[in-house]
Image (cartoon, rainbow, N blue to C red):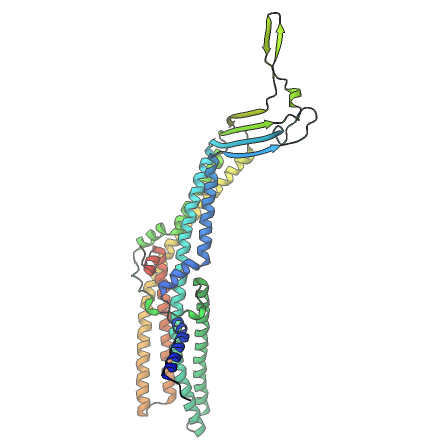
Length: 451
């Protein structure tokens, strides 16, 4: 049965549309895109943003103590005899209360401490951002390593299978011994083990990047060319000290120590006098017997004439405005709380010092590791080149009939092992270089190109 040209063209277009998504999914994802998705999707970013929001709200809460707080309500109730207070206030039909801080040395220090805590949260957000970038970059670079290794191992597996079949045929014909056949099978089994290892590691890294970026694990394919070359790491010790001074985690520790010092100072100043603004309005009821106990003013007659006798009287509308002054005289629990805050401040100061020393030592260690890994990479590169040349030489001898299949298998296995060793050394070098970039504050600029 023949199809028309129009029908054939339609079928081609339908097939192209169906296969288009598959072709798009097969495209590699560049490193920059992975990092951008990780920064917008990673749970660590949301957690850090929540910490910043919490610190900001805490600061706003303390600052709003200087704004009068208004409350309204009523204190309705039955009175028998003298109208007693309900929860400290006279029974009323309607009340309005206002209160705010005017002069409070402790609150001022607590407010400054809360502002420092906001700065700590912002610095921790920056450090968390660097952590996410480092995680995404290292996972991407390691996945690229395993993908390249898997491609080479699959080529090696094909050659190993051919060799195994050829040796099996020679054993069957009596040319080679059973030991040679076992060695060929062992060589092929080793390659399959390496392939299983590479596939397992790649699958785990794809799943990790999937959770980090929100992409489907099956859609993640690396582009090694999208990984920029790391800049040369500074080798002087002053760079390590500068990195410790500008590191976000160290800055956060220093700012936290400052916040703890301000908080301890506030605890001490809680023993100082304070002044608050206070105002109250109350509309009293007439059914709580107030008029029976507060007699209004009335005329009174004396020998000198009739005068208005001023006595205490019931007033339904009442208002009070003024200041509340407190002079702490003796408060043992508050004094102990201040001493505990002093200990926390000292602890935070020592923690900041330890964080600075740790980052400085870690940066110096990474600098030295970069130099060591660069030398190890050169050695591994030369060993791999020698193994490749040996493999070529054995292949030439094999073609000339002066080498055995076992010699070829040994040379191919040696070249594969040298390639794997070179890959591992290069990745460790990249890990150290990325660690230096994070310590010195240049990681985000290196990946995203942002200042």
